[in-house]
Length: 244
Length: 106
Image (cartoon, rainbow over all chains, first blue to last red):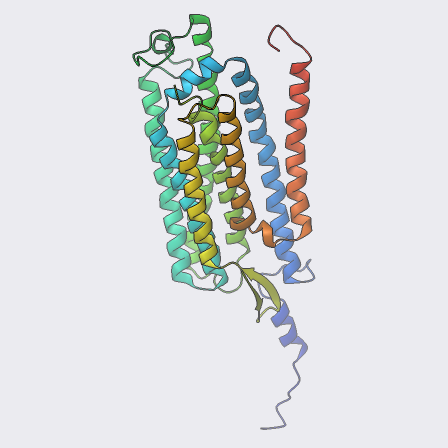
């Protein structure tokens, strides 16, 4: 080969090899940048645990005090809807993990496809949630909006235990917590879906299939976390004393 | 799971096999059906215990494998631990407040 063309790697080439365009200057290595971003996202998720934790703690105390009212309220929710929503979110977590895999493997079409399916599943979840909420409104289970305890004091289901009026009033606590917790969760879903739309658009422009997987990974962390919150919400809200 | 060196950028990234993701998906769906099914059986106070236990198991699977915690550094594992500790503190101290003031409820 031509010995005039130097075989040594220039400093510039080395820089380009270990300092890709998406690497920021205050990091020593790309691995450090990735680890730092990951840790940042995890710390944020820990704050989210505290955020939802307060609501879970309130649920814990009130359920303990007013179990019959919470039972009655929980039985007014649809297990079919709840289980379906859980399955949808778990599936969306799977497709999000596959999107991360596709980005790592630098395959743009699977990446975009998986992100799109995740988006659709998220929207389906929110739609079912909306249908549920409307159902609760129609049945007078929204605290502050024409709430009625009639269904709990005089239940139509022969197997249901009728509640005394003062205990039946406590079912408002259950529904308050239900709307607050699922509402907060839905808000997180909406934020996630918005960010996902943006990432999806950038993914179609090859932003994440050239080694820069970090944003997809970190968004994946957020999405899985929202799924985990729902995994806990489902049994606590929908499955209280279902055997009655 | 396969370790993979990113040849361009001399970076090591762990790539988890899709088959593992698929297996975890199936397990999670089975556990969901289990949770729903068991709730229709009267086990007294253990209904809540089992439901929460299964939920914790599902969350662990998601955290370890979908969120790659199994393949992450100790720093990230400690971060998660710190968050869970803080949540534990929240619940413990709040409950100890309520439990030590009976007000006729506890």
